[in-house]
Length: 92
Image (cartoon, rainbow, N blue to C red; front, side, top):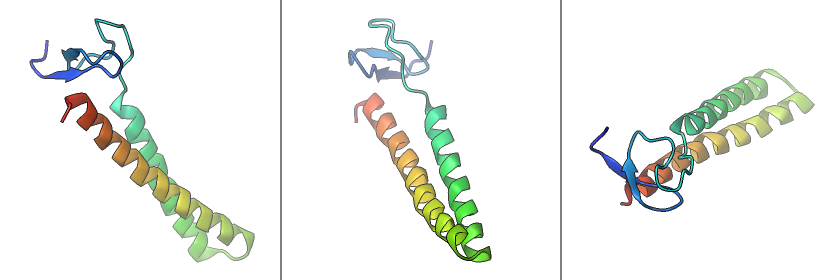
């Protein structure tokens, strides 16, 4: 068992940092892989949006602008969500 302790997202009891299910309330702890997936999807949408915007005209260019905005939001939002979860779990 890890010596690092974090707090459960539901019952706020200390649990091992590598636990995925709280031994006290059996709540599933958030996975950092979901946040990483959101960031990767955001970066992909941003890059694809830039390519569409630079190489097309008309409606497809507008779709590129939308992908740039959505990709930026997903990338930054996913990263800040990951940072907030880590800070909350470590109760800083």
